[in-house]
Length: 77
Image (cartoon, rainbow, N blue to C red; front, side):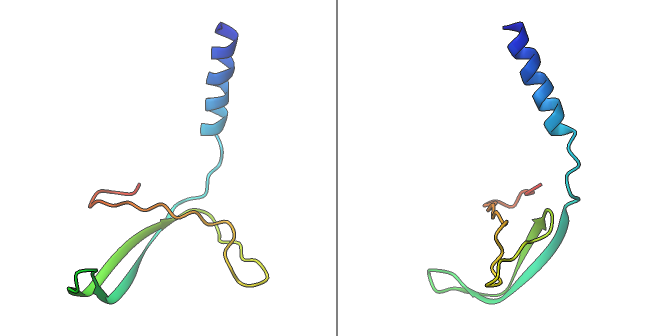
């Protein structure tokens, strides 16, 4: 059991030591955003964070993207 605990702890340390890309933040503005009930918001500002560089296939579609939605007014960090 002690050996397994050591292996798990060592594995976690290796994962944390990776050289991850620096996050890049940006904003996307949606004009005249219409809610499902019909109300219209003249300007909706969506803040986002990206990691790494998008890779596109021959059709121009990004193949290495993962979208994580954050449904509150908190931070996505």
